[in-house]
Image 1 (cartoon, rainbow, N blue to C red):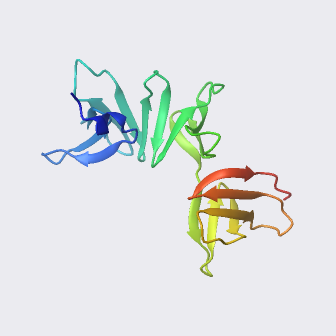
Image 2: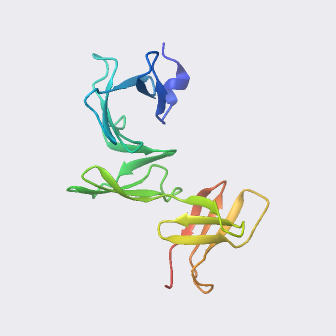
Image 3: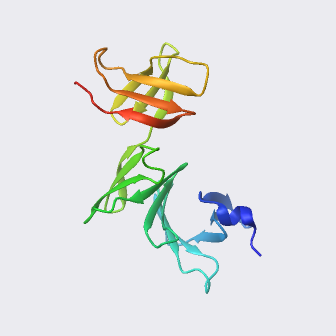
Length: 179
C-alpha cells in the first residue's frame, strides 16, 4: 500500500536521486528529467512505465501537468492554477485553484508564462510592510497584531482600492482604482 502522505501531496517536491540526477515527486509518482531537455524548459517522464503515462513539463520552476480529471494544471510555488474554461488558442488565462478565496492568476502564451499576478509581501525603504499585486502597491493602512490585515492603495490617498488578508492570504480585494 502506498504511503498516504505521498498520495495526498498536491505540491511537487524537487529532489535528487541517489545518483545525483534531478527528480520530481508528485503524489505517489516519481518523474525523471529527460536527457534531451535543456535550458529553462524541461520534460519529465514517469518512472512507473506501465502504470503511469503522464509526463510533466517545467518552465522556470513552473510544473505543467494534468489533474486527476485530465484537465491542465500549473503548479508554481505554493499556488496551483487551473486553466480558465473560456481560454482558447495560444493565449490562456489561469486562475488559482482556491478561487474565489485566492486571487492569484497567470497568463500564458504558447505555454510560456508572460504575466504572473501573485501577491508579493515586502518592506518599504522606511521599514513598513507593503504588498505588491500586479502593477499596484498597497500599504498596511491599519496595522494589527493579529493575522488579519487591511492594505490600502499607495498611489493616491483618495483611491478606494484595498485588500484584506488573513495570514497573508487575500480574502477581500476591491479593485476600484481611481487612477
